[in-house]
Length: 356
Image: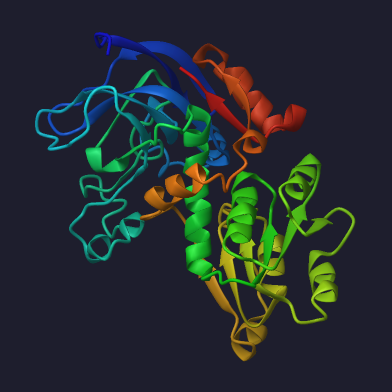
């Protein structure tokens, strides 16, 4: 590895809608962290919300701040007290959630629900959200949050892993089973990842709802029934196709209250609905009698605990069609254009990545 410079280039968020490309010090990895030379970092919808100030004061808790939580790269240096087998030159994917490791939920393995989240010195961090991420040339992370990449995996695939893990956790929550009929609400990167994983896990029939060119991508990726929400009622289409029974599992990946209501309404008696979307605190009215009398199980889903090794293995098996998922690449100097294109969904945009 080349010598580590004192300065690096980074996209620094100074306030809502105020991002500047600057030269800043390379972060310290001593004594117990790993310094990674960033090869690629994906842009996701959460980044846009944070950048525009919609998630303040939780995300970010301070300015100036470096965003970026879907990153991968080469190990540049390992802290003297890190106690890690990682070495310079290893290619790694970063997992952003750091639990305190001491509370009851962390000990159970649900570190993404760490009970000390929100405490300034509690030990919980979410890189790119509550602590600096990697829209930059270098990033730091604890060694346990860095997963080694197979030799055959490309940087593009590594970026997509960071969404596949969230989809995998959603299906863990919904307990997908072979021969299930599965509906996915929202054809973004998360929804399309859920679609491909559900098919790989034996779903007998898949439905996806949304609008625009992403429905064409869903069709290419094998969705059995594609529903345009600007022309059809998703619940009516699903109920008609299932003979009035409903699907076994629905996974809501969009966020609007209407999509959440539809996710619950289209499952069968005794079915399961997983809600993954974020809508900014809006109230969602449900017919609770139907949930009670039909014993519909409604799960919340967030993050990706204990999912990275499995997702990496599935990616190496070709379960995810990476070229259809990651569509555009930009340098750090082109960061503003990358964000603009991602927001506008121009030119068939799915996932956009920054290559520092």
